[in-house]
Length: 206
Image 1 (cartoon, rainbow, N blue to C red):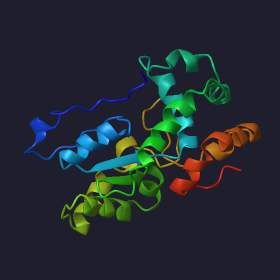
Image 2: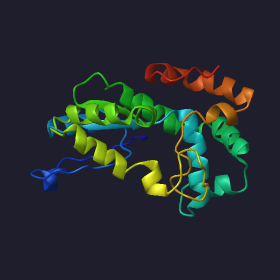
Image 3: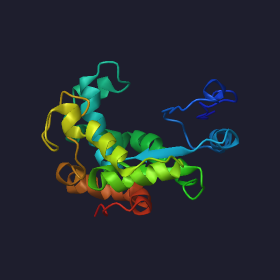
Image 4: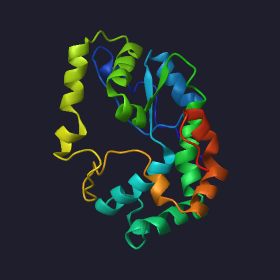
């Protein structure tokens, strides 16, 4: 059966009395969410515009030999890769359905959406809201310091928008899909994923 349960009872016991962040690609099924709730844990749903995610995934997979889809990308251009993941159904089954799963829980007090684009456009307010969600008391100067230490410029030595396709942190921008997708690809994405675009408040595809 196609069950995406990668959380289990007792997983968080070793962190019970510690401050910890656990990152994963957990699916938002009732089973997983209930374990998070029963342990009194709060969760961030970290999302990026799925249209830009395709582009990021392509470059990341070309640079890392152990990526699961390395063979799919290495002999394809970016446009050919986009066409492939659309036609195969992989993008909808994995990326889009993963987001849809979690969006069922965003109205609950234990799940908070953290959008990549918000971190780019209004970093300070986004971080401040995230800390408030966690009930962490962090003053404005501390937030500014955290932002500075983790900025694109600090981490890469490049200005945002200056691309290095060989690096994990490639370009640091949003909306690249508008220049990359063909008109046909935009129409196709609209047919399979516009519900997510609307729910997350992104710019319409067509």
